[in-house]
Length: 102
Image 1 (cartoon, rainbow, N blue to C red):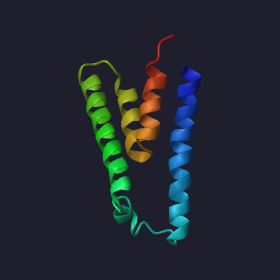
Image 2 (cartoon, one colour):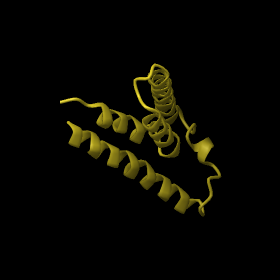
Image 3 (cartoon, helix red, strand yellow):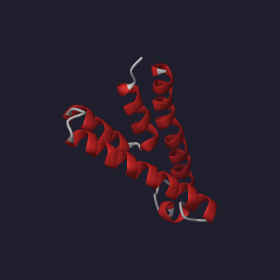
Image 4 (cartoon, rainbow, N blue to C red):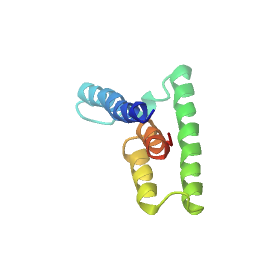
């Protein structure tokens, strides 16, 4: 299972950044239009809201775990940085990888 979570961590970085790279290439390395594109139609808005709620729930959970001393400061910082610098697609599998017990 840990190998699967590790593979998901890699995919959680590679797949989103692949699309970000191509978005930037198409827009002359500008983020202009990015925020309007993520709400461009109801299908994409649904996915955006789904991920927003999931990532917010995860953030609340991580803060709760830290405040109850179930995760150490070093891990808390790692999960928060991975969430905000890469995204939920890395941070959640990373948490699962770190906390999976055989």
